[in-house]
Image (cartoon, rainbow, N blue to C red; front, side, top):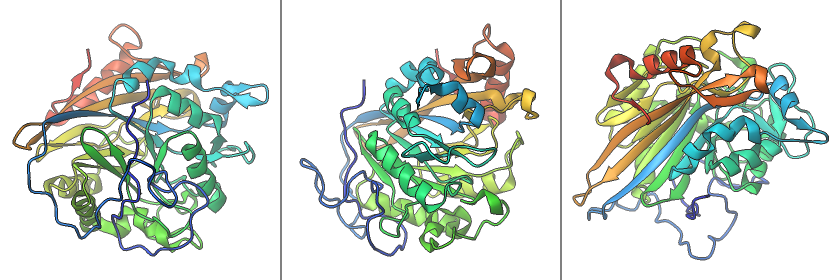
Length: 388
């Protein structure tokens, strides 16, 4: 069952970005123009934060790793003239549906007309993928990553439109300066703001962390090397001043196929969580599950691995590239307004031989994958627990 709440509209938040024409698709709050009926425009970013305690409430946020449909994944989804990914996601649907908010990491552009599709490491996926994401229960996706620009500006525009057409919000780069850097906001029992940043947006300049795509200088708002920790913290504080109870930041960072957390990840993650402005970090890019940590009572998921891809030993990737994890963070606010967090997770594994179906890994089903994921998630003293 899809959540009944809707995204808050017209939120004026975040970085110093210029205004301009609409981007041809959905805005980061899934609206263009006036807020829908029943919603009011949020207070400006300069509004003072509320001081009165808010009522007790609980929410859960479930997040998955990279949705990275290689050409072989898309071939397995092909059904005549269309595509169907439902079977690949079916095993995790009950987990996502139970969550207040579901967030995916979409490491591909989406094509509105299913042309210019994925070739080798240039990713552009059929629009039917968004329908499956919606039906499984995802409310939003992070779209800032090193494949954001794989289909150019057209790909950025179409990705946002396809997601919007399927009632999914896009946190990440916009196709015009209008709305650049702003979060998506979910009106759940606690209002949640979601930001998305990456080390780069162009796979062709892998090591260049400061260059924006051609003609899109506003996309610096989604480069964490340009924003630095202080810029992200300032954005998070503006989001809270505008009414957000929780700020979630998706970061595409770390080193590919490296199980170790980098110094950069630790430094940025520590700064964001100790600021008190950021409440949860969801990391991706290494394509392996990395440890989590709890800093200042808040979680950083350094890397939640792959969710859907064709990576694995058969194509020269580590065995752990077939591992993934559905992480669920529960937030509880008491009568005094104090918010606490707890983290559970469900290990997953991509069955490449069975049509790239994502299955739940357990001690008896895909036990090696299960052990790798549990070991990674509970290493370094993180108090995450396997969901029952």
